[in-house]
Length: 555
Image 1 (cartoon, rainbow, N blue to C red):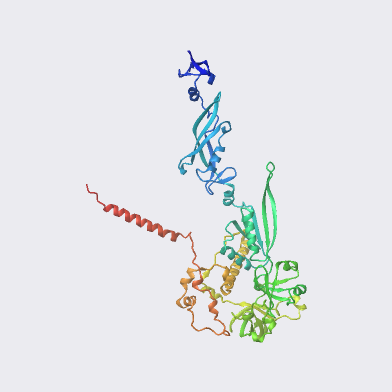
Image 2 (cartoon, rainbow, N blue to C red):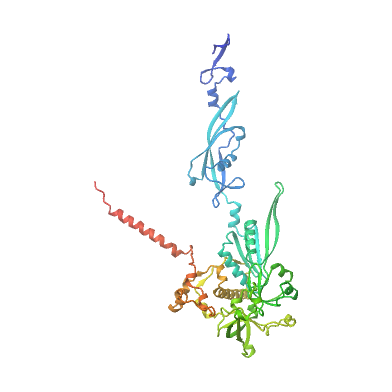
């Protein structure tokens, strides 16, 4: 049925035609819709969400709490970053206009994310339709690439290979304690122990660079870098490399006997050819056993004359000497140029030591030494006997000492009274062998390494400067075994009122490690310590239950 209404336009009256809707029988103007259905029926009969996905999957890493965008991005729940990731999972949104988007709260344990969307679209003849619907996303657990590298062995992005071609591991024991003290190995994935050093494996190149930079501040090193192509994406022009840093330490260690070439001695200021290495930092510190003057050798100079420098370690060429007499060298007996030398760091410790040796029929020999603060009459010193060493280069040297004292010998019985211990790195031994003969060789190497570590502990116990860079922990088992007299010696003495004379040597026991200087070892994985709070909590629960049983309810 068609009806006509009058519509006034200016002074003219134009008839307006309306018809009834074929669905709801409501009158409407067909010229506006150009259909036989009214606007309300068009909205009710049309669904503009057709073609838009209402469900999706979002990849989530439960270890690092990141979502796959890609790349993996750290997002909080109901954040705009997570909303952007969810909207990208929906297909068909490019054909509509998004008016509003918001999260609908869900429990994190439900592994569901709901988003409420409001969209708008033109349906018929300039008729815009707006509709609201809810999309649901499922959190799918997937391990990210970084977490795969952490949990999967043999997967690394950069490696640092530290090497030193010597017969002992004294330098690596000291390096190990430095890394533990300053937490320089916190990003390492795995540590492997080889014959000549250690291998550190890292997830990224920046972590390996951090270790190399730290090593350059404590030791004289030479670094060579190499890389290997692992994969290549031609479409995006991306390259994946594995980086390896080869860190080489000089073959000179602490307490080693060094014989320098004549040309290098002139460059160092005319020092003697026979030198003793007393410390190793970013440079090699040497001392002349005749003049007792110190000199510094850089890694660049060492690399230039590396093939001409001869090095003899103490473990292989050591001899024992018995101290007969110790006489301090006073500064008034030295010339002014020697006293004013800024390089002489052992000026207060210079002594003349009279020693005897078994190989020379106990004939007393007087030598100069820089160990005046630790040597006493009757003790046994360890050093080099140059008359017993077969060194061809000594034939060309006119002036060199017969004996060089390096350190004082520590009795193995005194190791039982040691009250401290050190932490170790968890390194995997990649040189493990199988078979009867091979197992015996491996056991022999392990015993030799354990003996070297005990000698390193001896050096730590008597070297006060070395202990500044090492964390010492209390060994509770050995402390409990000490008697009262030994335990009293390990405690600090009260401050004395009278000052000691400058010419009097300080007691040797004052430099020993005391109980007050040690740290307590905190082990969070110790089960007995964790059992105590559980028992206390259980007792509180039992007490609360007993109180409830005594409660009476009155009606």
